[in-house]
Amino acid sequence: MSGFDFTGRRYLVTGVTNQESIAWHVAAGLQRQGAEIVLSSFGRAARITRKAALRLPSPPDVIELDVTDESAYATVAQELTDRWGRLDGVLHSIAYAPADAVSGAFLGTPAASALAGFQVSAYSLQRLTAALTPLLTAGGRGGSVVGITVDSARALPGYDWMGVFKASLEAVARYLALHLGPDGVRVNLVASGPLETLSAKGVGSFDALADHYESWAPLGWDRSDPGQVVGAVLFLLSDLAGRTTGQVLHADGGLHAVSAGIGDPPHRPGPGRG
Image 1 (tube, rainbow, N blue to C red):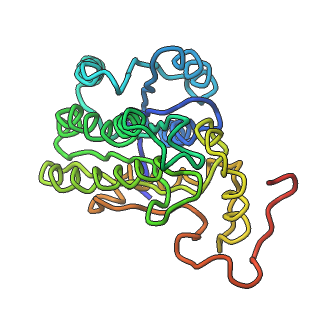
Image 2 (cartoon, helix red, strand yellow; image 1 turned 180 degrees about the vertical axis):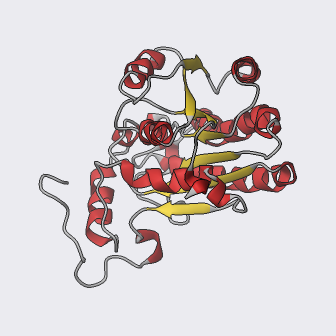
Image 3 (cartoon, rainbow, N blue to C red; image 1 turned 45 degrees about the vertical axis):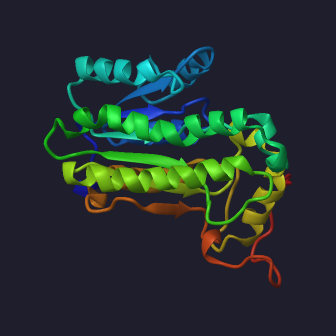
């Protein structure tokens, strides 16, 4: 399908930590489809990102982006302008919740922790997209911004404020879609099922939640396979989704669509799970 050909396209991929991250697998998928990419990271995490970058089909550059530093957005935009002059899309795969904001701590979370998590997990999508809009529109056809979320329509035990941040991320994406649609910029999210990533390790209920998905998702689910989400992201980044914006596309085995827990589950978690 020609709409799925990324040859000559250029993308910024944020959130690559290691080979288990969704962002790493999206980066690999983009490269296999012919795209040119740049990764972003910051501080001590950048060393880990550079190691992960070496394992991609074609090791890309890693640029500095600290989303808590307001000046960093303009710096990244200028660096990408100098490098490419335009941009076809962005993957926003950035989230953070302090330890006192998850795993049952919801009622006692201090304002500073809630605000810090909101800034990184939701507000950063607005700042990054706004900063890169001139690059996304420079090619004359607009561009695509895709973020990673979870099923925030329900309260997920243990996710607590991270669930709030993800619900906020969805609202930010809708308003970006409203304001940037006339410029041809599309903004969508992919809601993933639970995956064994670095951020998931901070959620005390992760194993129980993953067991639930692996037992009840109609199409099945595998917490160890970030590749399950890649197709949905690439679709939204591609021309095939040229008239799709403000949407949340679920890549969760279908669990969001059913009332699980009634009767016998259609699946059982795999060996060693839970």
